[in-house]
Length: 371
Image 1 (tube, one colour):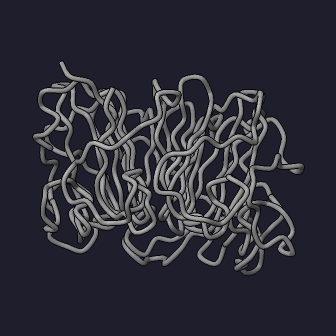
Image 2: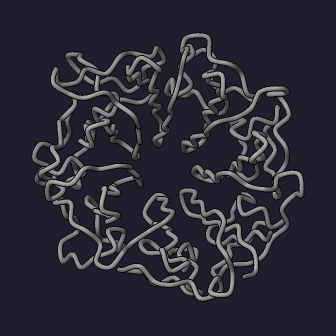
């Protein structure tokens, strides 16, 4: 299998053994032990790979210990994170400069910056350099990381949030949203909501998916992320129910979030987009800077999908890889820095079988093999 990466690389997050940006997919080294790759995750400037064996590998920006390696040095190639020992990892979530790791036994591990309480520990602990188990959260089944806040879904269906909450992204009942909330608190939802199955986070917003296919949203609505008129209200401090009628009556089966836009995969295989649009991140014709109305991206039928901060990457049923959105640093892999307003095929992968894709804030990855 081969690993290709491209985009911003200021900290070595592309695992290319240098710190120069790459504007077109470039083959880079991947440790044999990391193969086969199960999932790829990225933060503001760091990357974490999850192998099929349950190990994690990290590279890139590490000034707060977000790589979980026990130090603060940036790393330019994927390196095994050793501290979990016999634990098997189920999922990872990367914030701007912190990381959350969920193991198969439903234990949450944390590392990186805690400046806003986003690790769920007292603020006196400003950062954690090696992965540590969270003592306050048990039976975790899903995780999400925003710019500076975290979301946890527990086995009994509760959603807990912590970190920066100034724009309502914590969804907690309080007289005034707080900038720093290190103690996990339960999110309040409408009484009639179905069981929650997934959580996602944007820069300053949060969302959850229910088993009935409806979406719950809270936090910043500056760009219409809440499917309401942009900036009216500017934010939701408690959750809003987005009914299936918003998606033409279809059930949503999976949610994805960039910093200021969201994507929803519906039961019929369509991808709906809404939120900020001025970089082309919605993948469809939008004349305004944003669109609060979820609408399907024309002709897009995907097998894999992921969001960076303001760009997106997907594999199609045809086997092609497409990208769209913000393209500074060559994030979309087109070889230039012009924003991409609709899904565009990345031609280098036409002769490959694509195994995995992944995005960081401003970088992208594909794991593939020759057809």
